[in-house]
Length: 573
Image (cartoon, rainbow, N blue to C red; front, side):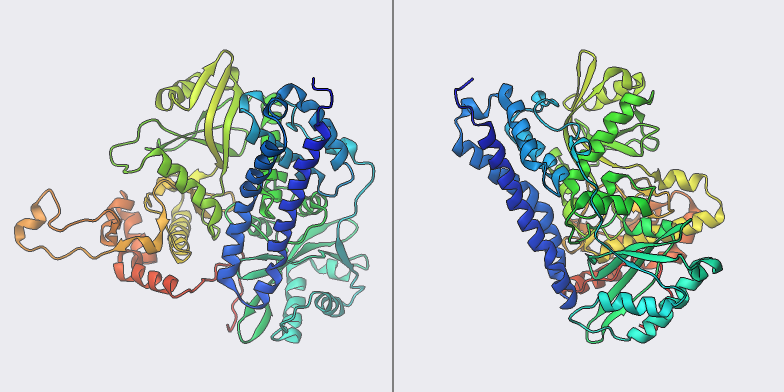
């Protein structure tokens, strides 16, 4: 060992880089209020993408600084990194974002070393935080006590949550909110002298909305509480709804939506607060939902290895039609699918491996409008061989030998994505009753329309590429053919020149690589004639090229659509 091996200096350099990242993260996040007040919707989308890209940019900067400051024989000697980890733990102990700083350290380590060298001695595979927290931290919330006067309490809430833009009709909104609160809760709750409302002190922002988030509770029961706000340009801020249904609140924090912008001084406490009101959400999802997606990835991985260590669950191929580009496997007792790129694609797929990777990474930074599943990208997953069903492993080795390898009693997955598991829409429809079929096809059409309005064209819109969530929402999850809607060339099929044209095996018209003919959708999307007719009734405009062109024109004109993650009651706006 060098006489003065600089473990503390390396640890300090890593943490200084984390502070720089957190400061830039805060600047972007803090601008959300002003963007909301000024109705700067395009700037909000740009800020969201910039904040996602920020992490990798700052990790790269720190790794560059480390290479400049320390000799390779010191920096890249993995045997000394337990000392760096120990020095780093000492530095982060007093922090209020210490769990995020562990994930940051892991990212730096993985940028310097091969994944073959990952170990808990050198990095934080398991967190050190819970055992080291010496005191209870208090969540940053505001507590309100109605004491029988709901109207006065609501008025006090919105005196605290005010903006530089005035509320359009505060008195009217408050009367409506009081009615919704009484309607949503059992009669006895509003009369309970112990009734309380607790709200997180910072407002959450996303796309064109702002959200107050908290809970309504008594000594014995609680309900989540979300109050969405909208800025109607030229009219002021409108209080749009009051939501106390756990399923609806869960959808607002869904894995299919962009990440919230919210000032959070103590991330663990806020996530703990969210977990109390949304017990069905995993910690990983909650961290991800507020922009800490890298730490969400850490929490996901820890949950996965814990599940494998403590259950008899084994990997199987995911139910559904086998993909032409991706091979998908899952753990029956874990709500996730694992997707790997096949070595060879079906001849009909005009993409290569690098294009598929680019498409999947694109989904991370665009507005998913509740209709595309978020993904996490992983390299060099290692799983015990005994955790695979033989048929599953055999298929993976056959179709993706360059990605899946056997190393003795270990299976190495060199590259994969994870997504929330859903029921493929084609399988759902096979077992659905008439009402469920109608609801699913209606939502399938809405999913296509909302993606299009957000400038995303799915490309391959087959039913098998959409899933149904536990809340019954239809979500797109196969991204190898997506593109920006404005890149596609929507055309009507030209009339035949001669009667023989219609009988020919080849089209009588030229077809460019980005040409799309919506008239061809019905037989392509639906083998079942009844479903085809029903979908034509529900969303027949999707078969018209002019409909798609009108959306392209709106997008090019800078229009940002409203896609609400909650049910809205009828309003005059």
